[in-house]
Amino acid sequence: MVDENMRVKGHKNVFAIGDITDVPELKQAYLAWAHAELIVKNLKVLMSGDKGTKLASHKPRSAIALVSLGRKEAVAQFPFMTISGCIPRKIKAGDLFIGKTKKKLRLESK
Image 1 (cartoon, one colour):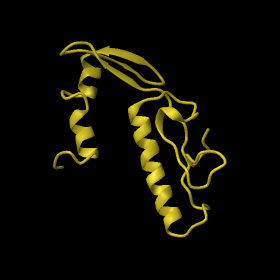
Image 2 (cartoon, one colour):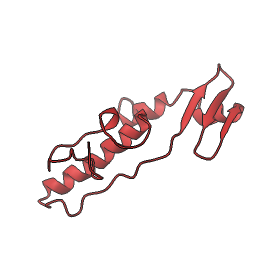
Image 3 (cartoon, helix red, strand yellow):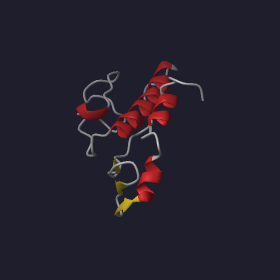
């Protein structure tokens, strides 16, 4: 169980991200990444000497899913609609977000 700052309830300096949390949202990698980015900000605030008054809060997000259906099509689920065909495939991009993920993890040059 975590609070809005992603701290484990009952602990001031213990944080949790991703699937292990009780945040009411789907357990997806992009959301775990958002949790991690928020926690980095909050750790910097705490390391600067702040007692926790300036911590950033996480707001649960709606479900988004993109699933490839072969080389030319995909299906996309957004909070407001679900679509299939070539447009979701273009959203997903040719490399299935691998390039974007590598850049975030600094596995290749930007």
